[in-house]
Length: 538
Ligand SMILES: Nc1ncnc2c1ncn2[C@@H]1O[C@H](COP(=O)(O)OP(=O)(O)OP(=O)(O)O)[C@@H](O)[C@H]1O
Image (tube, rainbow, N blue to C red; front, side, top):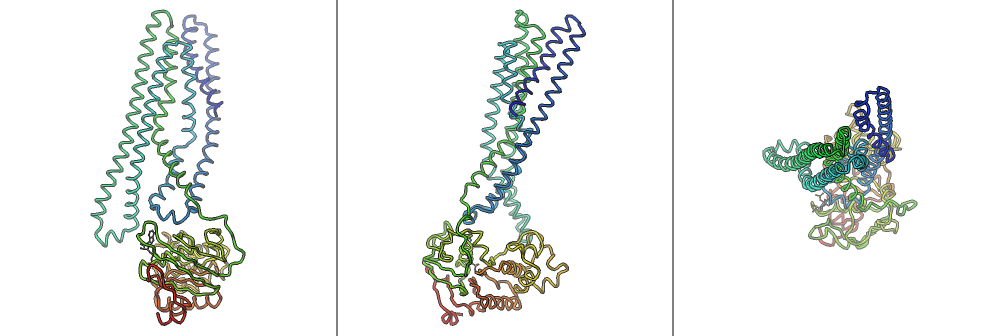
C-alpha cells in the first residue's frame, strides 16, 4: 500500500506537468505533435494512477476487513469470558457501549479512510515538486500545510475531550431508553411517564449539547481549513505574480505552482472530515482494550476426571463489593456425594449469592470452595459448569425455541431426554396446551412467559445437563400447588439417583427433606443443622 501510495502521488504530478507543458510548449509554438504526445502521456499516467488507486483500495480492504472481525471476536470472547464478579460491577449500559463500539470502529476504519490517511504523508512529494519549481512558493505552501495540520491536531484534541464528556451523557440516555422501552407497563401503571420524561429531556439535552459541540468543532475546523486554502491560493498567485514580473517564474509555472499547492492541501482537507469518526473509533478501541484487559474466568485449570458430587466449604466468607458487612462468614461444611443441603434465609440474606458462588459467578471474600479436594479457583469453569444442574432464581433465556433453550448446555440431548427433562420440570401441561410444543419460539428472551412457566423451563434446562451437583435457587417460587408437587417429586428422584442437592429455599416442603440446613439469617456465622433438627425447624 505504501508503494502504491508513492506511485499514485508521483503520477498525480503528471496532470500538473501536462498543464505547464501545454501552456509553455504547445501554446507558444502550436506544434500539434507536441500536444498529442503530451495528451497521450497524461492519459496513460491517469490510467496508471487509477490502477494503483484501485489496487491500494483492495489491499486496504484486505487489511481492514479481518481487523473488524478480529475486534468483534475479541469483544465477544471478553464479554463471555471476563470474571462474572467483575462484570457485576460494570453497569449494563457500559457493557453495551463496549459492544456498540464495534460498529463505531467499523464505520471509521474503512478502506477509503485508511487510504485517505496514507495520502497525508505522501503530500510531501507534491510539496517537494513545488519547492523545485519555486522555493519561495514552496515555503508559502509549507506554511499553509503546517497551519492545516495544526488545525486538524487541535480539532482532534478537542474532539477527544468532548467525546469523553459525551460518553457519560450517552450512557445515561441509553439506560433511560432501555427502561422506557422494556418497562412500558411500569411506566403506565405508576404514571411514571412525566417524571421519566423530565429525566429523558435532561439527559437528551446534555447528550445533544455534547454532540452539537463536537459537530461545531468539526465545522469550525473545516471552515478554518477552507480559509487556509483560500489564503494559500491568493498568496501563491500574488507572490507568483511578483516573481513573474521579476522574471523568476513564467505564467505556465505560476499556474502549475497553484495547482500543486492546492493538491498538497487536499489530503489534509480530507483528514479534517475524519476527525470525529476516528476520535470516536479510538475511544471505542480504548474502551474495548480496557475491557479485554479484565481478568478472565479460569479456563485452563484442572478438569477433574469423574466428579462424584462431593463439595466442601472451608471457612467461607462472602459479600458483594462495597457492602457494609459480609453476608456470611466462617461457613465450613462437607456435602458428601448424594447429600442434600437446603440454604434458607430471609429476603436479602444471601441465598442467591451463595448459589452464584458455587457456580463461580461470584467470588468468596475468604475461604475455599473445594471440589474433589481442589479449590474452585483452580478448576476450569467450563468443566465445572458441565457438572452442574443450575436453576438461577431469575432464569434468563436465549432467543430461540423451547427446545433450543432446554438444550442450551447440552445440544446433543435427544428427544427422549428433552421429554424427560420437560416432564421432570412439570412443563408438559403447558407444552401440550401450546400449538407448537417444543418448537414454540419463546420470543423476547422469554420475557412474556408467565413466571411459573419460566421457572419450569429453567428447571428443565438445568436437568438437561445431567450434572452431578444440582444447584437450585428457589425452585418452587411462583409455582402453583401442582407445580410444587412436581418439583418435590423431582427432588426426591434426583436424591434417589444419588445426585448431590443444594437448594436455596424457605419452602417448608423442601426444608422437610433436607439432610442439612444452612440458615443465613444467623449473622454473621450461619447456623448449620442436621436432619433431625431441620425437621423440628421446619
Ligand atoms: N449483583 C449484585 N451486586 C451488588 N449487590 C448485590 C448483587 N446481588 C445481590 N446483592 C446484594 O446482596 C445481598 C444478598 O442478596 P441475595 O439476592 O443473595 O439474597 P437472597 O437471600 O437470595 O434474597 P431473596 O430471598 O430476596 O432472593 C442483598 O443485600 C443484595 O442487595
